[in-house]
Length: 337
Image (cartoon, rainbow, N blue to C red):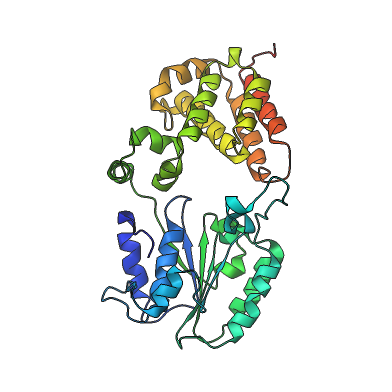
């Protein structure tokens, strides 16, 4: 069984309440980093468990639990993009980039699975993660399966962005929100994991405790480097900085999120005298925001939103980094040297 997080206690109780009459499709939705996948995997294991505990949790001891832990359960399928399924060790520099979408072929491959009887005579479970990664053809293929349920079969869809799913899919799912823990609860949990300066780490991760746990020292170092450049835009060399980030394999989506957090604080301090993500850098943010025009800030935020939608496309990261840093300097009306 995967880790059970303290902030999931209430939603675990609600899931246990569904055990007497499981829906055909369950949708777990919430912000990224709330632990939805671990929650879904634990629930899937409990549904397949042959000797569940009194509270509905999996026993971790029966043959079904053993197969599940070994990722070989015949009545379970995990549908996810190849980019998540493929380990770093299996990727070479010359290999084709793994897909970041769930394809129609992956969903169609469920046809045989859905028509078979359960190996252990109970439920068959399909977990789709993240559900918003389905392309349109895959989503339509899944919809057809949801419209024609086959016996004791449970679909668990896990999503960070339910608004990106087809309304017809949403209407066929029992929806269950998974809330992010409070800041105090997140800090307390990170302290238990022996994380230094948990409040700062939490802010860097957008207040997600699990994303904060995943921040590596190298990632934190690159984040600090970017923040130093943002605080001193007059001295920024966008070409050199872009080259450094590329050499450290910083993902475009990561830089975009850092810039979005920084721009959010610039606007928040200007309009509401509050800083959310960088409280320790408030003086620098105040200096920069004083002469900042809101029109220019909104233009920058729009550019970041567009870049975020295109962040996974096969483009040259260095060129994107240079473009975003140049746009940042232009927002602050700093001429290129």
